[in-house]
Amino acid sequence: MDCGEGTQHQLQRSEIKSSQIRRIFITHMHGDHTFGLMGLIASCGLAGKGQPIDIYGPEGLKEYLLATAKYSHMNFGSRLKIHTVRPGLLYEDDEFRVSCQLLKHRIPAHGYRIVEKDRPGMFDIEKAKSLGIPPGPIYGKLKQGQVVTLEDGRRINGRDLCGKPETGRKVVYCTDTVFCDAAVELAKDADVLIHEATFAHQDAQMAFEKMHSTSTMAAQVALLAGVKQLIMTHFSPRYAPGNPIGLNDLKQEARAIFPNTKLAYDFYSYQVPRRREENKVKVGAGVRSKEQARDAGLLVIDDD
Ligand SMILES: [Zn+2]
Ligand SMILES: [Zn+2]
Image 1 (cartoon, rainbow, N blue to C red):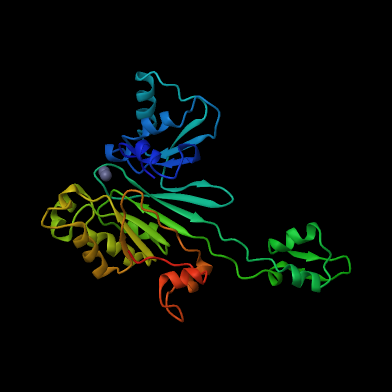
Image 2: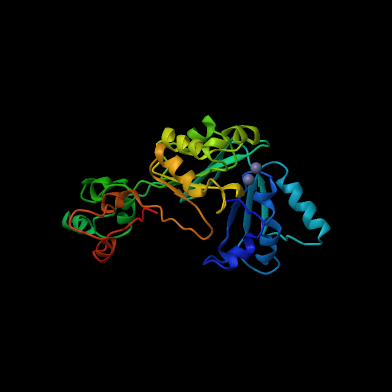
């Protein structure tokens, strides 16, 4: 999502390799979201063999990249595809669905929603065997929850042999934007909402003028959309250490409205919990520390 200046250098310092990048989604054309693209594309070594890369973004992105490539005498080759997005569904495969929505910024800016598809529950092989169902291709159908007729005439509903389906996770990315209903709609029931918070609450006037969000706007989107976790990013340098208001203040402001708020920073990573693991995550009941919980094989989520 987005590619600000210096992305390829930070990537080299991270655990992610550029060869792992398959799709890039750009929210809007402002430089702090696009200036890293050419460097990143160049470092992907498109001349060699490797995976295709699809870039999705607003109108103007394709022209911008083609012009930059032309005047820097760079050949994208056939592995790079640039797609111009419109609000609605823009990508779908067996695992994921990605859609976007226009937000409210000085220039057209899109928010993205990634939805992992639900997976059928675990197939109970022992139960299938005990019902005398012969192993074979029929198991595949039952695993998918289909109704199957056996040779002896019995009809078996695959769903009776599968555990609870696993609900897919949803991640929503909203930047840059001032508070808007479209962001709330896009973020509905998301497991994680990544939302910009350029300004502190007391600088709301500036947020409206520049069409950015305050910490409290981001928190209200999270609250109204009923998300599970808010991660704020895109902070103004005016809150850097040494200034009267700092990022901790932005965090406290947001938490007063939406307690499950975290601040993003370079190399920060967050594991989105699977829905079936939800009940396991609480440290409490019999475990006194996170270390103990980890030892007990529980999934632990840090508060900060
Ligand atoms: Zn912008
Ligand atoms: Zn920006």
